[in-house]
Amino acid sequence: MERWLLKAVSLMEDIHRTAAHITALRNEQMREIGLDRRRWAVLLAISRSDYSLSISDLARTLKKSRQATQRMAVALARAGWVEFLLNGDDTASGNLR
Image (tube, rainbow, N blue to C red; front, top):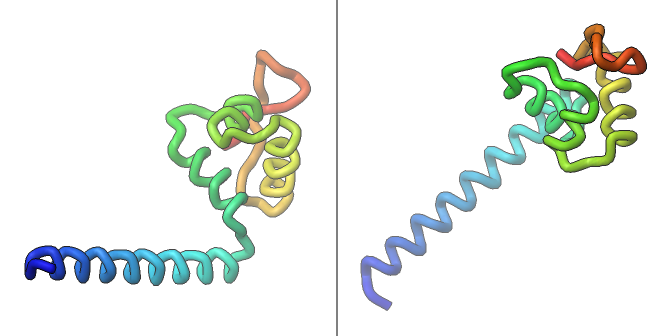
């Protein structure tokens, strides 16, 4: 193999190892504060939104069912991670913030 290719492969392996290490650290930190990947994904989607999300908006963003998203949102609200805001269009459920 050519020298430049060996260096490139070595660099890719280093990047892969570093990414795996960062992922492991993030997962450990999430466990310490009581979050799992699904809950983290919900919080991330809410934080990245420019407006408060309805359950339907959040479900579409996460590509999950509305029912599963509702259960996750309620669990996060009970734990104090998010709050429901009044939604004038939908009196059954509020938007998330």
